[in-house]
Length: 271
Image (spheres, one colour):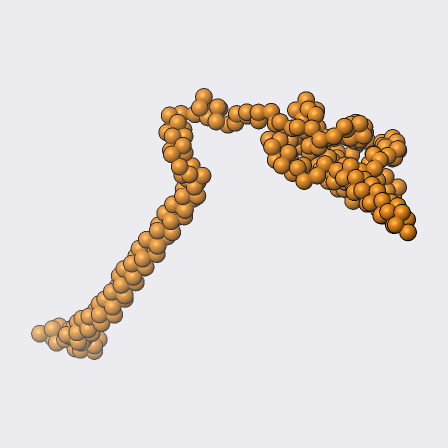
């Protein structure tokens, strides 16, 4: 009985240790023979597709090229799979590649995120045609299949880029542009200067409109007063002219009749 219990406990211990080692190291390679489906996708997907991809070239990624590109290639394939229907064979094949990349990423572990942050300045974004894109997928899967283990990743120095706008302004711009550049170096005034200029223009226009309104009111009031005075003088002048005309008519002597003139002529002749 004691020997049987010892053998049973030994077998159970070996079973648990075997499963624990299998979970740590992983049994088999996550990259299967389904890689051959890349040729099928090249033929089925139109060649004029522009597939977006975020990547790091091999010369910059070095031994960590697989670790640095596995996540972004997985996301790119997920977006490409959404372009096809649920029954499409293209979607099924792309989903297989996504599962392979997920297995590779899980085996790398949590250190992947920190490695990607160290190489953040080396990532590039582009849109590749179908043939070029799936050649990249095929090369990546083959490299992931022959990946030995985790490598020590050291990021090369970030590339230095110069803004062309600053050089052009320094060469072609007048002296005022150089003064503005000095002002921008002292603080954040260069970013807020266009907004201040726009606000000042709006304030100036509003002030001008506010000044024009009372001026127009004053002018209209003066015109109204002048017209009112003229209207008040016209009835008085008409009344005075009417009185004078009636007085002259009253003072004029009445005209003599024709009979009186004839009588006077007759008396003169008799004399």
